[in-house]
Length: 188
Image (cartoon, rainbow, N blue to C red; front, side):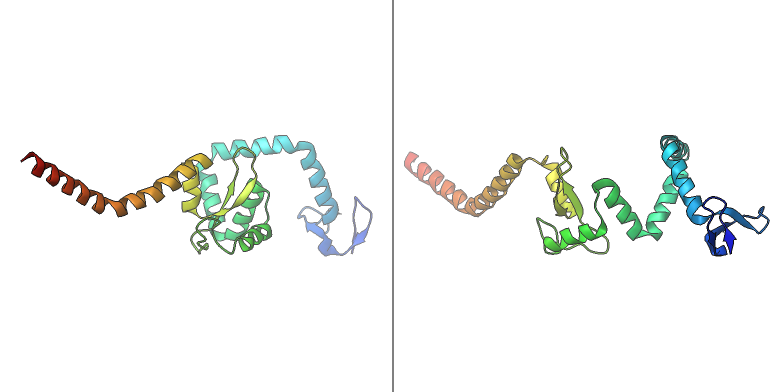
């Protein structure tokens, strides 16, 4: 047992960090007080700490990128959770609920995610409002059509009418040949 220098409580030795220079090999304050002190210091110096980290990342971009690639490889779930939280303010549970509400697949083509590809979070770029989960192909298609409902409708009309024209093409070619032969016969 040891008494914390900061809070004055007597606590088990496991509640103190190690310190080689201390008489008993432990820090004088307990882990809880040490953590509270570090949090208070960070709140006070947050901007400076963030600026220092960003400066290091820029100066050591190759090392930072290699470290992040390794982290994402060894901690895929944590990396995914960090990305969802940072970019969309979502938890993994909220993502899973969205996926379940969509029937387990892409909101457009209904293809399910697989071990290589997760579904992307489709969002309104102007407002950040989340619309649903899309596979890479559907997400890219919407982006390439500039997220415009008018362009999407024209694309649907084009694809639909093009299919009808393909079905009519042999008949139209036959009609054109017959008409050309009829005109030839009249001229002769």
